[in-house]
Length: 256
Length: 336
Image (cartoon, rainbow over all chains, first blue to last red; front, side):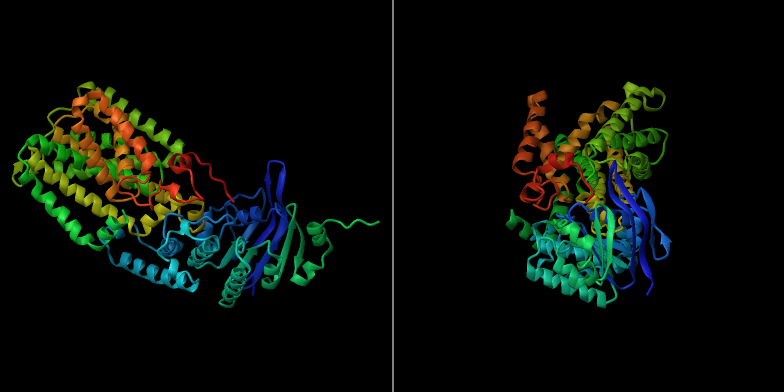
């Protein structure tokens, strides 16, 4: 299948705090890869380093055989890495449909001149973007909300809009930062099914999540981070029985 | 308000045609030259406020030195018109020159936002005014530039407000039309995404620097054209016409009319200019009325007269992002 996203020895420090220390990760084409860890373990920092939102203090990030360390977030997004945010960052004063349309930004070729004269390129862009955006909004079951302002929606629905927006980028790899946070069990189940469906369609996905049941059911391989270090990696069964992981989550058992 | 909006949405084309018809017939109904010059002035400010709205309202940058751009447009036209260049070409050329200056200003300020960008634009505007005041050889210094010729218009020189009105109207229509088209395209969507959340915009592949620069250039272009339009009408310009007060005046029109809407600046220009004329007897006390108007707007209708709840600064209607305009301006964003 081949490695799609790879980090080599990546580190990120905030002053004296070592948020991410020497993490190696290899995400294979077509898999669902999970990242878990206690609060403050460095999961989101690691994500931000991968997408260029933060620059690493050490190590390299490779995507599709290219070194993308130090590139701007917009460039990395154009190459095919889409992400969602832990604290939902939607365009609140734009409708759901407009939010999704911005996801197609990199696939549109219109410039100011095209927009002024409404030439063929503009019309093509607007037409395909509109059609695709409507279809995608439909796919995520958001058609009823399509004309509502994103900022007015319920939390769980906003999460879905954010995923739709990221998918509009037509990414090679999708990074989801706590997609199930704030969702009720039914919504979580639906989301889980949806992500599995995406994988069937060939999408590679990396997911950070706190909901253990969600991660264990969904992911093929899981990495556990604690205090910025990778403490374990493997299939869900292996991770569940790992001593270090249990210590990280439940503490060391006292022996009498 | 909702009813009004529905009414507007339903009869959009008809309404636009009606407004067009009224504005074309208008100079034939009004005899008085003084009234007509007020209306021409309103049209100038529609262009200026609209161009500022492109920068402040659509891409969420905070430019308070708009008078600087207007100055460049006005001086470009005045200097070259006195050398005998054709004025119709100079209108566009003034826009292009201003747009290039806008690009130069945009370059170092692309990383700034909110109050920091505001300070740079303020300084820029003031520097330009001082240059215009002191570079006597080029700008006439404190004496200004006199005798700016009027453009030819259907075989005669457009010196009266009644003739000049049509030239101003022509540019207002083009300004609003081009703005409308650009905003309803990939470019406009990119601007709005930067306004709403630049981190999210970046993560979707929007090249923020590029689109901010385009935004500044587009806004500056129309500010330049607006300034260029004013010069032949007044036949005289000097640096005091482009003080910071002028910048704030344009800003107040955008705020009172409604940021982030196309109609907003039009309404703002009409309301503010009419208020100015109505309270002309009150002299300096007029400024007090402005202040009260702006504060009242912030308090009662932060989205402006023509703005809907979709406006940028109408944050109060949303719980999660509450805090209003000023809070958003000073808000420090964090990467999560």
